[in-house]
Length: 251
Image (cartoon, rainbow, N blue to C red; front, side, top):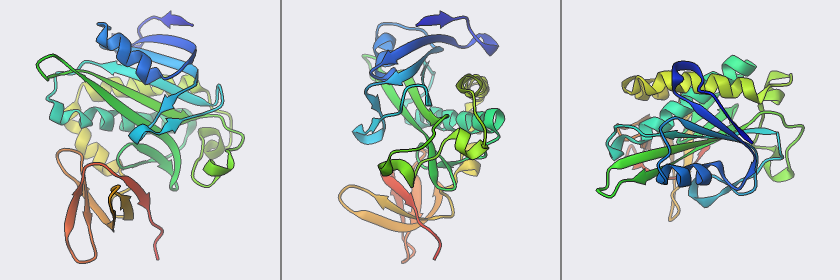
């Protein structure tokens, strides 16, 4: 465990932990206690990593990049999704730079290679007493060095080393991620268009689990709030704010 000096652009201060229940949980707690913008926590292993909709994220020690970033943006809460977009773009650029792996973004917050999941992101917010956005913690779990996956993940997951055909250093991916994220946070207005261009979901036929029902159609766009627009076979366009998306194979 230890601290490191700020990295490029003076934005980040990195705290390293051997083991933690959840980097997002830890960072949210210290954010509520007054931690500054730019604090980053990296763990070798998580015992209770979290994904979207209450799911768990598990990985063998040392196999994945497990990192959470604290940002205190001057943003309306309605634009908080732009920060997750920025992080997704930064991670996509990082795996290409550090591992030579070309990945796409899957709405809303996964990184995929040929529809196999390489990484997931989870953003959690903290509000001030008057309801304004006080802090955003963006967590990343990216598969870096895996020999094989358990049966329940084998068909749908991949890792940087498997795609690159060589060993990949987690530190290289982390450095590239933080460098790119710093740049994107300085130009958030450019993020939505870049995200749209990198979104592998657009133009695909998708099935969306909305909980109460399942929606099937073609993903056509995202709106200004980062919501997915899906056009069904009868020509109706539905707006999806939250849902699990499956990319369907072409017939």
